[in-house]
Length: 160
Ligand SMILES: Cc1cc2nc3c(=O)[nH]c(=O)nc-3n(C[C@H](O)[C@H](O)[C@H](O)COP(=O)(O)O)c2cc1C
Image (cartoon, rainbow, N blue to C red):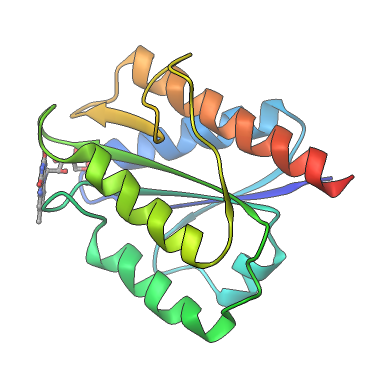
């Protein structure tokens, strides 16, 4: 069974709600899903996952420092996340507040790990991952569920 790890940072709860929806989407595809708040994630957990989905609030148009610290620490396992499926989600305060640059900052780090990134052809939300502005709406939560589903389905395919 494909293992999907959902990691998030959240101070005021918006990204946390998105993380629950992402996890629910991955579960609906039959994946074994763990959901972890940042600070609680070991490098072994990253290595053991087939899919890793990371959510951060948009801070200055980028991922939060807490998420960046995980990536910085993960240079110790460089080469060991290759071909895992990756995706990102974010919550920002305003629509033009840099949510897409935040998703790209997460995806960029995943690409440097040679992970395989899941996008969206505008079926349910953003091209680069799921986005919410403030409190997640039902539309945003749907995009989160679909992102989790896509990652789990691809991870299952790659399992062979
Ligand atoms: C340090 C800091 C920087 C922020 N920078 C931005 C920003 O650049 N653009 C934006 O739209 N919102 C920004 N925000 C607002 C948060 O992204 C927004 O409130 C988000 O929904 C918080 O997510 P959370 O409830 O999961 O903590 C910032 C908030 C903080 C605390």
